[in-house]
Amino acid sequence: MALRRGSSLSGLAKRGLGQLHSELSSTVCAAQAEATAPLNGSFSLGGVRHASQLAVKQRMRSVQNIAKITSAMKMVAASKMRVAQTQTEKSRGMLTPFLTMLGDLPAVEVEHNLVVPVSTDKGLCGGINSTVSKYARGTLATFEGEGQQNELIVMGEKGRAQLARDRSSFIKETIADTQKVRITFSQVSAIAEELMKTEYDVVRIIFNKFQSAISFKPTIATVLSPDALEKEVEAGGKLDQYETEGPDRAEMLQDLAEFQLAVTLNNAMLENNCSEQASRMSAMESSTKNAKEMLEKLTLSYNRTRQAAITTELTEIISGAAALEG
Amino acid sequence: MSSSAAASSYWRVAGMSYLKYANLCADMVRGSLKEPTKTKAKLREAVYYRAATWKDGKPEKQVITDLTDTAAEQEVKK
Image (cartoon, rainbow over all chains, first blue to last red; front, side, top):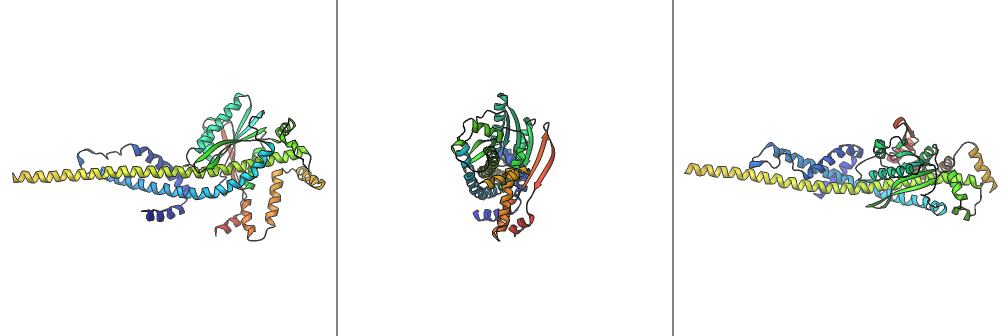
C-alpha cells in the first residue's frame, strides 16, 4: 500500500498543484460534509442488491483518490515549508536591529493608518487567512473608534475576497501573485514603494508569524512614516543614544523609515508564506485522516449490505428447497 | 564621510527613493559577479506582482509588474 501510494504521489506532484486546488476545494468540502451523513441508499432495507451498491463503490473510489491527493499535497507543503523556514529565519536577522534601535510602537498616536493584511493567494491552508482578516477588521474598528483615518492595502487573493465583502470602502489597493515567481527583496521594495505612494503616518502590517509547524501567531507590525518617526525620535526615542555619521538626521531617518518598511514587509511576507505551508501541511494531514475514516465506514457498510443480500438469497433458496421437499 | 553625504543627496535630488537607490546598488554588485554565482544571484532580482487600485469599493484597473529575467529563469529550469 505504501509503495503504491509512493508511486502515485510522484505522478501527482508533477501535475500542477494549482489545478488540483480548484478541483479539490469542492470535493474535499463535500467529502467532509458527507463523512458524517450516510450515503443515499447505502443502508437500503431488505438487503437487496441495488444500484446503490454501485454508488457506494464509486464513492469509495473517489474518497480513496481524495486521500491520495491530500496526502500528496501534504508532502509538497512539507518540502516547501522547509525552504520557506530557512528564508524566514534569515529575514529575521534584518528585522531585529530595527526593533532594538527604534522599538516597536503599536500605541503611537497618529492620524492616518495604513493597514496591510498579508494573506495567501491559494486556499486549502486552514484558518490563517481568516485570522488575518479578523485582525484587520479589529484594527480598523479600533482606530475608527479613536477617530483616526484608515485605509487598507490588501496583499493576497484570499484576504481580498474576505475583506471586499464588508470593508470594500476602505480598500485602496490590492496586491496579489507575489509568490508566483518568488519573494525577493527587490520585489518587496517595489511593493513598499507602492505603499509609500499613499499618505500615511503609520503602516500596520498584519501577518501570521511562524513559530513552529503547528503554531502561527497573528502579528501586527508597526512601521512609522519618515515624518512620524522624526516626531517620535524628538519626543525622546532611543535613537539619540547612538552616535551616527553621514547625512543629517532628517535625511537619515527618511532612509531608515523606508528601509524599515521594506524589511518589515519582507519579513511579514516570508513569515506568512512559511505559516501558509505549515498550515496547509496540517490541514491536508487531517483531510487525509478524515478521508481514510470515511473510507473505512463506507467499506464496512458496503460489505455489510453485500453480506445481507447474500444471506437473504441463501434463505430464499433454502426455504424454496424445503417447500419443494415438503 | 562628507563625500557619502553629498552622494546620498545627489540621488535624492534626482528623485530616487532610498529603496530604489539601495536596490540599484545591489543590482550593480550582482552584475559584477562571476559565473556561476551570477546566474544564481540574478534570480534574486525577480519582481512579479499584480496590483489593482480600488475606488469607491470597486477595483479599477489592474497592473502587472513583471521584471523577471526570463533567460535566467529558463537557465535554472534546465
